[in-house]
Image (cartoon, rainbow over all chains, first blue to last red; front, side, top):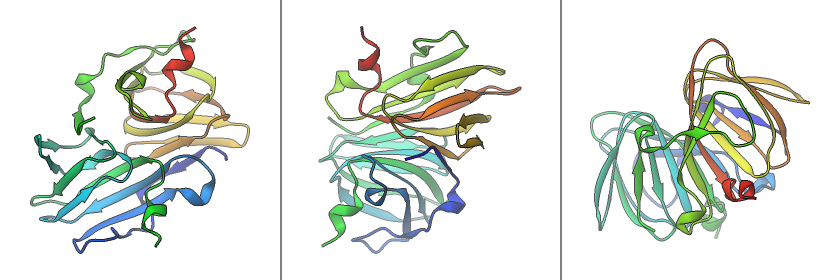
Length: 117
Length: 117
């Protein structure tokens, strides 16, 4: 594989699988490309909620807006330039408040392959 | 491991190993924590150059400023919100121009362990 540069305009955002909220994800690098990690962008509409148990290690970097992320240990709010690390097995609830949030994400291993059944 | 949130103020930035430029990196999650990936922040002073062959898969998310990244295939310039993916084995030259650049990075596997000899 070669070096690649991505912008959010490069991502084909589709509804995050397995839930109905207005939350969209777009992989730019994943299991189709032969490397070990998935890279993409996410967009969260205002006032959305997603509850998930992480099937992979997932790192979100907030680019715009804020995400409120809750686990049984408490709640964090992440804004632009902040990183949220959700290790595999973590049960999280991610919510947005009155603004859209944009994220970049990196997962190990590939999350999308786990949804292909 | 539990969910964690990081800000650049959480990172202890140290000079990037193996080179003399004013380029600093600070791991927040790495081989000390038992997971598969390293997460950190980087700070590049203006007018710096770093040449490296990637020992791991490395994803940089530009948070501030711009990075110019060259390989034998060409040159890309990445600004805020853009992602540069440098697969393992890629030979890169990273430069900054007249402004400081800040990045978040994620690597698989852990890069720092490779420098511990």
